[in-house]
Image (cartoon, rainbow, N blue to C red; front, side):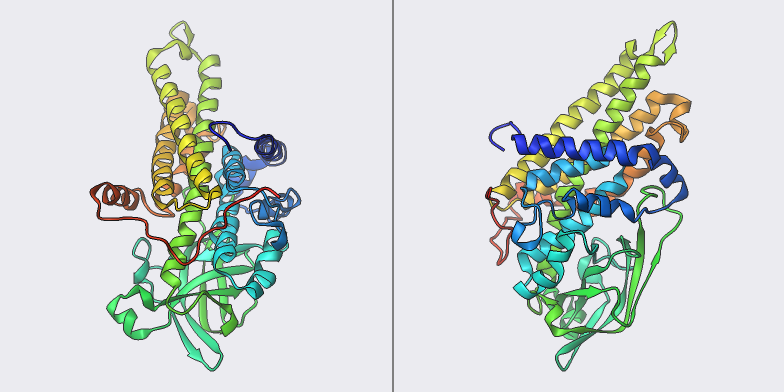
Length: 401
């Protein structure tokens, strides 16, 4: 991307994903949402388009596109339903990009390549029953036994938990540092569904994203080969934060798509719904809500595009991505609320998509760092309490081949 222009490749990705989501999924998303049913064929179809490895280099089985392309795909997917974007967020953002930056060549060959091709579905497991924003509050442990590790612990609110094949997860390898809450005692591991001691289940009764799979998994005396340690012992916290940054980028782009969906649905309804002798689109307070959706959409899009541009340059973007995630998700919540308001009583009905948008938007304000966490981050940057220091690993600069 140069200046404010998207390249022909970007426009092609945008068009491809828009047509796929609009034609393949949109006609049946209401049915999937109401049934609370995850359609496993959807990621398979996304893989046929190259989306499951969209920004992974071709040498590792990916499509070799850039990070802006990933953002465009996320925006278009969430325009139809949040559950579609979540697939890319956890599979590509949280897992594949983390393997690309931190994985050994053997790990990339064994895990990243089949994931980027869409042959295996992957996710990320950090959150636990007593640990969300407080990452060092996790209780999972990993003890070294010979060349292997024995993992024990429970993870919850994990997207694709009950359907994924591969997982990146985190556990304490140093009991003393766990007691002291010293994050250098945390380590990261690549685990597989078929490892003995692994169990998963689905969470039912969610407010939103009902067409997606969300669940929990447990590890009970689960033996993990030493070669599945990601990075080195003690680097788990750094790896977890790195992964969350990539996830936040996809969430920001997706939330931008949700704002646009709310805007478009509101415009359609306001132009055809009549009250007080004319279409409600003529009423000033309705115009105000639609104007705010448009402003928030343009702001959010510029913020995530800026983060994507920095990623393409191989530059650190923690601050920029945090801002994009915070602003876009909060704006999507406001847009969804106003969209329901514009629809009036009809907005309370599943006959109209804004009811689903309203339920779906809330999750993104919570996961990948709550709005409160991101407010604190942004304040700390301005106050000088926080600065971005170089890390040992980073995403490769994107270069067109």
